[in-house]
Amino acid sequence: MEKYFNAVYILDSIPKLLPYLNVTFMVTGLSVLFGTLLGFILAVAKIRKGKIAKKIANGYTTALRCTPSIVLLFFTYYGIPAASQCFGIDLDNVNKALFIVITFSLQFAAAMCEVIRTAYQSVEKGQFEAAVSVGLSNIQAYKTIILPQAFVVALPNIGNSLLALIKEGALAYTIGLIDVMGKASLIVAGNYNAHALEIYIALSIIYWVISIAIEQSFLKLEKIFSKGKQFVKAV
Image (cartoon, rainbow, N blue to C red; front, side):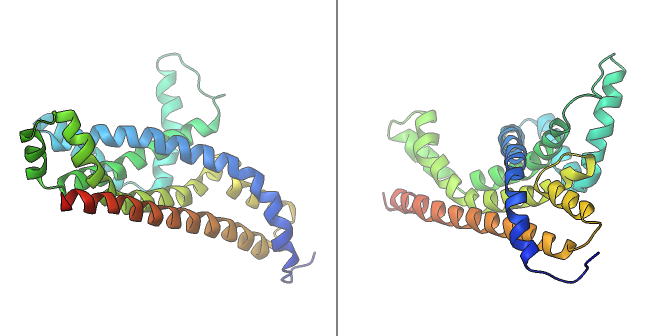
């Protein structure tokens, strides 16, 4: 079996890996969607004055941010089916992607909770009061004054959280979901670990391209929305 480095394997591996990006993007997209919704609810609980809801939100974010991703994944993968059996529900044949989405939605929610909370609190409260005093309703004040400015503040952290989520998604292979990382591992195993370095370099290139594309997209969005923020300040 040939063990020497051969760059040809890098080019040959990329077309084999790319089709499995669909699984990676599906898991990431669903996790972002559900995680953002839950993160928003948690952020509202922290911002409002309700003590019980605030303690629950604080406890949730602390617990999730202190739990390693792979531990949370195994806890979800083995814990949910075990708990469901107590109610006579069999989840053994459920698609593994479900547990991946649940895991990373919970984790992304903890990150987004802090992103949304800090972004909202960065906007001066006087701007809301001024908007209401000139005749805008509460909804209009939030929609036209508060949220656009908070969104600009949140953008860099949203981008960082998204990048972290995509990289953490590589853990999906540990429970048998075949995404781009899983396919790379299968190719290596099929080659009896020969040319593993080249295959993982190909995988790294794919992740680099995705990460750079996301980073540049968020930088452009930040510039676009920052113009609106400057306009609001000028007014």
